[in-house]
Amino acid sequence: MRSVISIILLAVIAVGIGLSLDHVPFGEPKTKVGTHYIDKGREETGATNIVTSVVLNYRGFDTLGEVTVLFVAATGLGAVLATRRKKEKRQIEPASLVLFTGCRFLFPLILLYGTYIFIHGHLTPGGGFQGGAIIASAFVLVYLGCRGRRISETGSKTIESLGGLAFIIIGLVGLAVGGHYFLSNYLPKGELNTLFSAGVIPIIYIAIGFKVGSELAGVIDHLVEESE
Amino acid sequence: MDMSNVVTFLQSYSYYIGAFGLIFIGLFIMLVKHNLIKVIIGLSILETGVNLFLVAVGYISKGTAPIFSNSSIEAERMVDPVPQALVLTAIVIGVAVLALALSLAIRLYQHYGVLDLRQIKEQRW
Image (cartoon, rainbow over all chains, first blue to last red; front, side):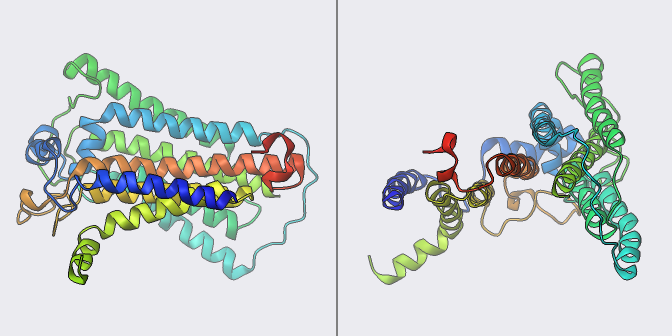
C-alpha cells in the first residue's frame, strides 16, 4: 500500500522535474559567472585550477560554512557516541604478520600521497578535502590491519581546531590587510603553474587538509571504538 | 515519436536520466523500507544522484576539466567550474552526515534492540 502511494508520489515529482528540465539543455555552454571565473580566474587568483580558485577565493566564505557543517557533523557523532562507562577490554585477535607489516609499510606512503594532493590543490585536480579524505583512508587501514592501535583523541582534536583557526585567521587578516572582503588574496601571486603561487590558496588548503583528515580519522575512531 | 527521436532524447539527456534515476531510487527506498540501515543507504544513493545532477548541469559537450595545466588548453572548451566546486565540498559533507546518521542508528539499536522502524514505538509513521 505504502509503496503504491510512494510510486504515485514519485511519478508526480518526476513529471514536474521532467517538464522543468526541458529548459536546461544538456551540454550547452556555461553560465556567465562560470565564464568569468575561467577567463579572469588565473590573473585574479593565480591558481591554474579554476575549481580551487572558486572554492577558496571567489566562494571562500561559503567554504568556511561547509567546513563548519563538517565540524558540526563530526562533533555531533562524538556527542551521540560518547560513553564514558568502563567497558571490559575485549580480547582482540592480533593481525597476522603479513597484514601488520603491510599496513605499517603502506601507512606513511598513503599519508605522503594525501599530503601531495592537498599541497598541489591549486595546480592539479586535488585539494584539502580530497587530500584529507585520503589521509583518513590511511587511518582506516591502520584500524582494520594493525588492530589495537588508536589515534590520540586530544591530538586529532588539536589538529582539527588549529586547522579551522588557521582558515579563519588567514581570512580575517585578508579582511584587514588586503581588500574589503573576507579571504582576499593578499600574498604575492607568484608565477603561474609553480608550487609557490596563488598567494593564500595553498596555505588555506593545507589547513583544510589537516582539518578534514583529522576530523574523518576521529569519526572512524569513534565508530571503531563503538563496535568493540 | 519514432525510434530515432527516442534515441536522440536518451543520448542527449542520459546524464539527467541517470542522476534522477538515482534520486528516485533513493527517495523510494527512504519512503518504503522499514529497516533503518536501508533508509540510510537510500539517503546515500539520493545524495549521489544530486551530486551527479549538479556536475551534469555544468557539463558542456566535449569539454575538459577547468585546469590550465598546460598552455594548449583553450578556455572555450572548459566545463563550468561552479557546480564542481559545490559538489567537491558536498561529497565530504555527505560522508560526515552519513557517519552521523549511522551513529544515531547504532544508538537506536542499543536502546531498542531492533532496527525495524515499525517496532520502535516513538518512531512509528
